[in-house]
Length: 223
Image (cartoon, rainbow, N blue to C red; front, side):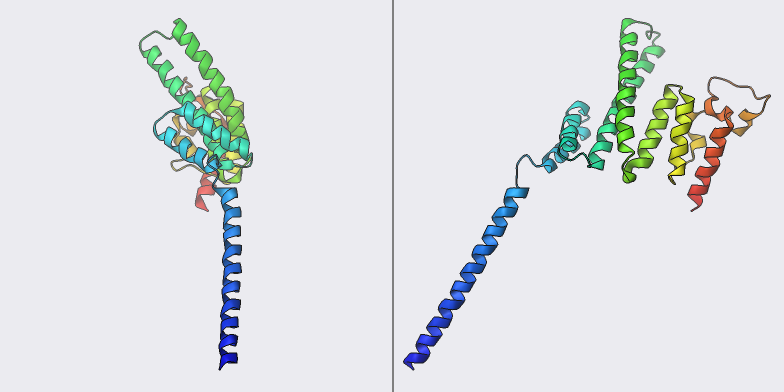
């Protein structure tokens, strides 16, 4: 009986020792994982703050956090696209401000001249960052479309067509069709006729290459 009691006690001690070793191992693993993921400076903090600042329309603050994400991981496609899209948004705001000056006939003032300079700076910045963003397959379509819009508003029609062609060649399409986007022109395919009455609003609608792109976009939509 005494021998049996000793055996039971020994087995209990072995079991307790095993359990203790197991929980110690789990604790060590958890501590290692915490040291890798619980860093208060982790990139996810920058992502949350970038989203918060975008909701508040504090574009400059959002950009700083997005730049931190990109610096930590240059292959973060989402951060790269959002950074480029923020620059794109800022240039759009500047364009709206300039249009307001035009409506007030104040666009030739010093304020108007300064706005035009800022718009061109943001055109260049957003173009450079959107070109980086289009390297990521998930964001390629939107980046290319934004690039086409920037070039269209600069009236660089050759570059606009190049980006639109890359857009459709990548299998992308827009909901209403590129032909409906006023930034690329108006008037319809009849504007390619030799006797068509071309106006300042016609833009790419007078270019047969644009209509070839539109047909390929329609084919993408059919798939």
